[in-house]
Image 1: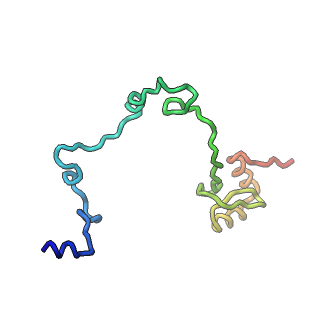
Image 2 (image 1 turned 180 degrees about the vertical axis):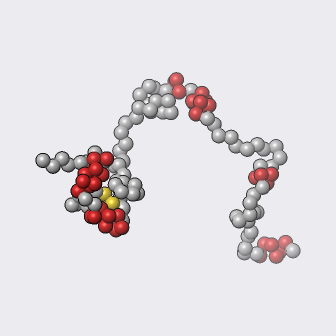
Length: 123
């Protein structure tokens, strides 16, 4: 019988992925569940008083600006927008939104640009 096991190419996992794992199988007797630490416990454990004051950490939120460029967000839907309309300067996510952007009156376009603080004041 051992020879059959050695020659077998298919090895089954210890549990099927579609089966729900019972809590007693996941944590055998004597082991406890992993508990999440709260921020207060992390701060006490890390001893942040010994760190230099200019180094950013959990306590000090003053950090340098991000080196990554900001994401361009669609002005209409809020999704990531790879395109922008050169006529209105509104950003859009897909062709359906582009049709909507082109059909907007100029007053609404100015309001959307004002929300993004990119409004152009025409005199």
